[in-house]
Image 1 (cartoon, rainbow, N blue to C red):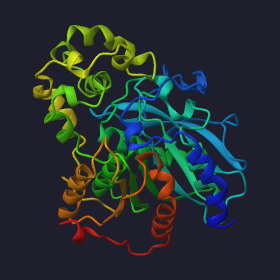
Image 2 (image 1 turned 90 degrees about the vertical axis):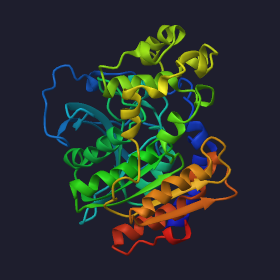
Image 3 (image 1 turned 180 degrees about the horizontal axis):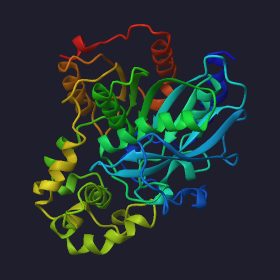
Image 4 (image 1 turned 30 degrees about the vertical axis):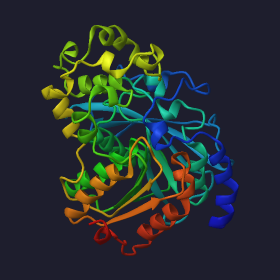
Length: 394
């Protein structure tokens, strides 16, 4: 099937749905109506530590709402938390329901946008795997897609929320686990992230500078790329983007010694236990402003600073080229915020292709750029040299 036929067959359905835009990704999605319950597969109570990337167990699963010809296998594997301790992570592998080619299916590691820190917020528990039409499109093009849930979502434990390094680690170790679970996957892979998954895949490129996996070929970040330190530490709580309890949960995950009362007001402390009960932010449900939840000096807390520093991008060279795609119409993450990150990446000497979509609504960025994504990914697997427009960013 040609690229054009696949795009016409899949993209309209995808664009008719609610893929998370930068704006959507920055706000919690309301309770999803089409999810599966947590089952025994996600039970991690008797799991012993293992090597990162090792497969714990897998399960073929045929109940997802995906395009015909797309097969799915759930995976549970070992990863590493911020403190270096072993953590089980769940996810799902999507692949063509056919005999693999002789060289195997090339692999795309998917980093999803976030809609909460509760276990039921895991994409592998969603009937369309959060972005099923787009992921099915890549499978129809002959790729296998491994979509991690991130630690704490699906499998037991805690989620580190917007910690780019933690999410990137889960993305990286999902790839060998997927190969162990599904026959016919290539060793070569690229990463794609959307929303809060965008910083994660840039962090993948930077972590790979030390890991040196020769089979990692590059990353594509679609919307959501910004400097979290700049957004949070230099902004008043009143301008904070409506996720204070999720952020507090993530910091407590990475730094258990954090005293929540140092960050949260009495109203915040009363609402905090609810974050593990649903995918909706309790602050919004309670109709409270972030300023009513966070103490005025919350950003000065040392654990807040340490946590946000884990998502700083452009401080370490990337191992492979990256592509960044953003809308100039996004009001939640202004294009200049993405430009600041791009500037740092370029100064590190990274190969960056930065694509601005001046007319695209933020909710349409992924669909509007899909042809360019495909061309860039095909070039990486073909071994062609990546283009960089860093010289135009200064």
